[in-house]
Length: 313
Ligand SMILES: C[S@@+](CC[C@H](N)C(=O)[O-])C[C@H]1O[C@@H](n2cnc3c(N)ncnc32)[C@H](O)[C@@H]1O
Image 1 (spheres, rainbow, N blue to C red):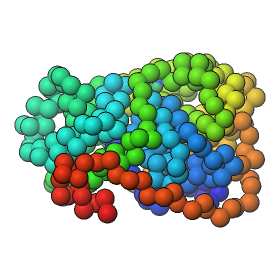
Image 2: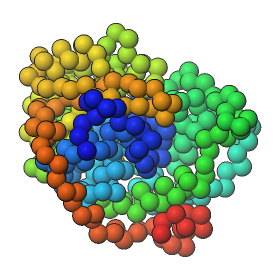
Image 3: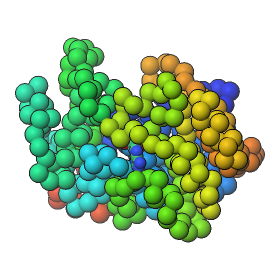
């Protein structure tokens, strides 16, 4: 388990646990993050630009750490806030009961949400029917899809409800906030034992893709690097493979390494990991720590639909 610098990390090797199909999602980075934890075991893991929060799902599954998820986009935030609230069973049930047809989907997409639960449901539907899972304005709907399934090609209600139940079972370890990651990084007096993960929208370079992927894509990247450089707790950043990012790292006395990943479509892409140093990546392998004791489920049994119960074991 070393950093995927020479051989790309194949996304198919890493199990997906999150709820979203998120553009720029970091499921594939999980093995590298777990390696970082060998040097810096977390008591609290902070995902500052949560997006689909793929790595928080990994942390909840593989470590006993507490998790702080932060996201600026109110639609994305609504999903995390609901999953770790008492409304999670209702969200799961609404997904299972949804009569998925083109008309009902369009109705949900055009409705104004009245509650956080409504907003969470609309976001999940949008994430499943938009091309590439893109939630930013202007993203188009999936057209034909696999096996002529059209819009429904990514609508897996039982899987989604099951994942909600699994994530919700960890809710006493999770805090969800909606805020600006820059302010959080600059102002929070993080305690020892905290590990911070930073995965900003990729909008630092001239040809960056992030602008069309996220509603909230504007970011002062120089300010972000300055904030990370002064953090007193261990942190890691993933960023786009771009000279502008390397220059920012250089300016702030930080180190970077190119890493590779192969997408589900077999396309290999290069990204960067930015860190204070890479001593952790070069340490010899250590045996994996034992898995944490099974967390008691807080999901009220009677509210859980049968499909969900069977996935929880
Ligand atoms: C690259 S994506 C994160 C993907 C995530 N790591 C995952 O695995 O799904 C960047 C996220 O940052 C959010 N974002 C943009 N500006 C932000 C800010 N100032 N504070 C917090 N989140 C922000 C975007 O809405 C987007 O969801």
